[in-house]
Image (cartoon, rainbow, N blue to C red):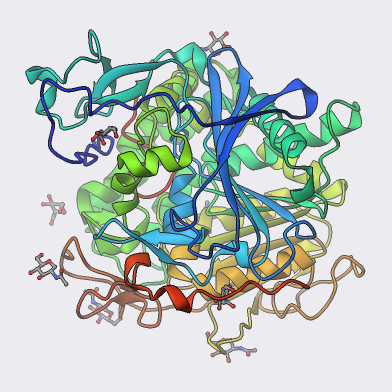
Length: 588
Ligand SMILES: *[C@@H]1O[C@H](CO)[C@@H](O)[C@H](O)[C@H]1NC(C)=O
Ligand SMILES: *[C@@H]1O[C@H](CO)[C@@H](O)[C@H](O)[C@H]1NC(C)=O
Ligand SMILES: *[C@@H]1O[C@H](CO)[C@@H](O)[C@H](O)[C@H]1NC(C)=O
Ligand SMILES: *[C@@H]1O[C@H](CO)[C@@H](O)[C@H](O)[C@H]1NC(C)=O
Ligand SMILES: *[C@@H]1O[C@H](CO)[C@@H](O)[C@H](O)[C@H]1NC(C)=O
Ligand SMILES: *[C@@H]1O[C@H](CO)[C@@H](O)[C@H](O)[C@H]1NC(C)=O
Ligand SMILES: *[C@@H]1O[C@H](CO)[C@@H](O)[C@H](O)[C@H]1NC(C)=O
Ligand SMILES: *[C@@H]1O[C@H](CO)[C@@H](O)[C@H](O)[C@H]1NC(C)=O
């Protein structure tokens, strides 16, 4: 079984000093947002992530409930007047995964290399939109409940220390002493539905404090467990709008990458993806004994499928939780056990150095903590939130996600599902069945067509009917914008403009009857040319042209190396079970 990341081990532990704890931020500005939600924030100095001093960035908290403080980090849109730009909210999944994963590994303005300095991301989604990254629910990432001195054990659990005078010897060995949220399961959410109200409150707080950044429509983008979060949260926002509660959220688009929606379908997809002709990388190393074991653990009497059906039928926490644990250990985990590959990218063996995790150490540097107003040490995954959700078996529930997607479409909100096809964890074969289940008008008779992009390389295919689309992205793991940055940004721009995803040339907003005419299935096969047969060195870099590691590590120039004069002016005018999750990289 996997455990939570414990590689946070940053710096040497100065036993007998308080240096390893995070002092309370003292320089936050207070503001009252909409719906009475109190917001505290600061302007983040240029160079902390966005390197262009003309593009502003703010971070802070929405105080959504007693002892529940939700961290957010906002970046103005580049290359345009941010007060005319749309607003896009990004969250990661988990449950318990921090949205700093998306920010630093995927689609934010910067990444972080081994020198622990940010480097520019030219394919940042902030090139097209204002971006708001939110750590939720409480205890995730930099969102805190009650800050306590503590440390994380090997499974990622938070253990409280008697006081913050020192890191005692018994804790020092873990290398994780710091300030953490009290691991109180009642101070986070334990279901998808239960997490929606505090997300709404966070948005009310932010939009009230910064109304200038939410004038041109709102989009919600996510991945992984976001297949649970996004449909349910956004249907909740529409319901609050309908009831006239708070400020009206002008929702236009919901984008979900490698989403986890319907476990009954998606647990079966683990088998389909693993057994030929399943994945499109022609990788089928399992012998008949292993395949039979996999099949039986799924379909045998009383096994994963039966247990999940029982969860659906009874809705009981104990039944769902038991089913989920069984399905994880006996179905999902067989891949880890027999292939030794990364669940989030079958092309790499574990440990997989992609996407890069140096940002976790960066966010634990005192100067960065001060710059963003942090009040706890950063972890990419919250064991408190993952335990709380584990106790209700939310992962094994469909949680109304399919019907919520239909609700969004009926309300005229675009829904786009995109899947990197090398991801096993939330694989595209399951996603494809989910897309069929949603049964958007016209979708059944649409077909797959190539997606064209400015680099003239075919990065994937799309099947679209009106405002609903399903995308398969080639040569991409779970975190698509990391592996296919150019295609991701151009697809994002098309989604914002509500043009057809395949070409970006036809308005779907005006022509709701638009439909792709193509093949009934997406048949392209990459073959095994990019499947790595050796474990990669920890400092390896990923080459998006080769779709494979660089022969020698090649890091982009970081902030410190860039000449000051080269900064361009912005032109205005245009475990519970912490071991597992559907999150960023590493069970994150
Ligand atoms: C937690 O933050 C403190 C204060 O900056 C730092 O000294 C310490 O190394 C951090 N702990 C971890 C585990 O990163
Ligand atoms: C994104 O914006 C930056 C800053 O203006 C620019 O340098 C970069 O080329 C843009 N990226 C793309 C893909 O156009
Ligand atoms: C798995 O494969 C079977 C047989 O081809 C198919 O009927 C089923 O729909 C597939 N399910 C998923 C989730 O891929
Ligand atoms: C099948 O593969 C498993 C796992 O690698 C191995 O333990 C087992 O001996 C193999 N069985 C046969 C019959 O080759
Ligand atoms: C989940 O949270 C709700 C609301 O806080 C609580 O009433 C319930 O007991 C929790 N469920 C479990 C299984 O912990
Ligand atoms: C779609 O892209 C593939 C390469 O992935 C290419 O071989 C094929 O000709 C393209 N199809 C069309 C209709 O352009
Ligand atoms: C790669 O694919 C080729 C052709 O399909 C096959 O002959 C070869 O055995 C595969 N290699 C591995 C390591 O799977
Ligand atoms: C990368 O790490 C390897 C050891 O795994 C080391 O030999 C090599 O010098 C490192 N390369 C760079 C560019 O840091």
